[in-house]
Image 1 (tube, rainbow, N blue to C red):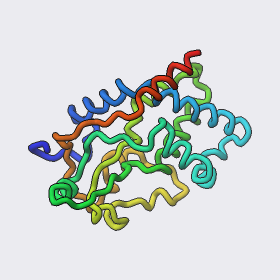
Image 2: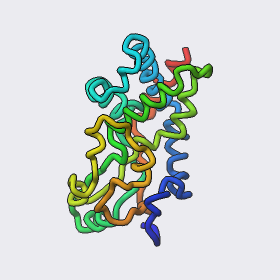
Image 3: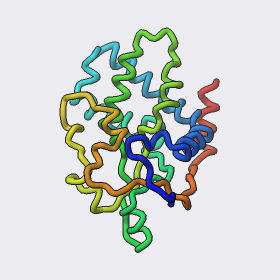
Length: 207
């Protein structure tokens, strides 16, 4: 692991974090965009009929939590080796750990619906491609210990409210109330799966 822990309030701007995210986008970015386009198509249809009802909590949990929050980019999680100190120690001792979604499916869905609504009048219909490149970290996971993963230690209460998710609050890991220092594993190798299938999907969308 690194010699010092990542700054929890600014971990997303760490050079190695950005380097690993850039690698993910280089390999899978076109696939993410192809899958995310499916989300935009559905949101356009829903918005045409239901207007701003699509941002209601009931609509999001019933329709978007799985479609967008879980599968919006064609995979449920992006793992670049982010890991808490407690999880590193548990791994060393052969104990099971948990991969926690930094934002969660409901939060991610809400953030995307909000971005869509803000861009409904955008003349650039492909706005979402650049937006996704800047925001695909919404699917990142952090490996934590089983003890850290308990609800008393990671605050998930805001996912149950009617209010909009505070993106910056979660980005700064302020909801990680009782979670040990954050590291980026030196021994971690990004695992790219099913690239033949993903590349074929991208090619099929060019027709």
